[in-house]
Length: 213
Ligand SMILES: Cc1cc2nc3c(=O)[nH]c(=O)nc-3n(C[C@H](O)[C@H](O)[C@H](O)COP(=O)(O)O)c2cc1C
Image: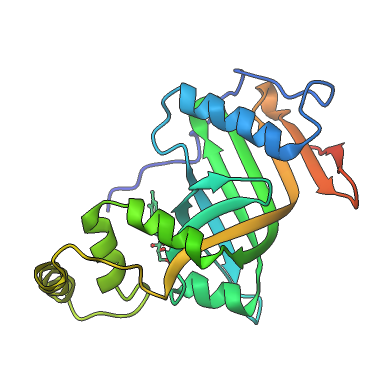
């Protein structure tokens, strides 16, 4: 067996810093600044985020989804409501997001409460998706066990032939919004003395604290 020693892989971080006197008092606006930086430096998949959920017994699970919008309410993503994550969100609406923009030596953690977005908004987004993505969302029973790849390919072609391009959003597919009550912005610094600023939602505004790295 070929074993590569990964224990010695070590990177020094030195590109930026994070100062409580310079950050935006509103974490959503601070997030948007960092997202703009990620977009500007052409990071691959800058909107990819890890979404952590848990079931009613507290057993966690995590996967990557794509952020599709940030608004005054929160962070929007789309998925199958009958998927594992959809079932878990129904059991426990508390969830967390993590972004890692490694080219900028940055991580953002966001925690909050998840709810479905209005059906109308999901319909608008669904109809903006490429045809093949819409068909896949319809034919894929996301998170269910299936008997081979052929099952999906066959369903895809059958649906494409019979639908004549008139494709409506299935009821079990749509958007969620994570309404944040906690953020943490992490900036890698030299000697492992990284900057960590967290924001906790107050009745009015946000409280910023620095955390030890
Ligand atoms: C880069 C990337 C982007 C993804 N984007 C989404 C997405 O926006 N929505 C989605 O449902 N799954 C997305 N997935 C697939 C999920 O990671 C996951 O496999 C799927 O949602 C099923 O998860 P679940 O069984 O925990 O519900 C993406 C995966 C990757 C690697």
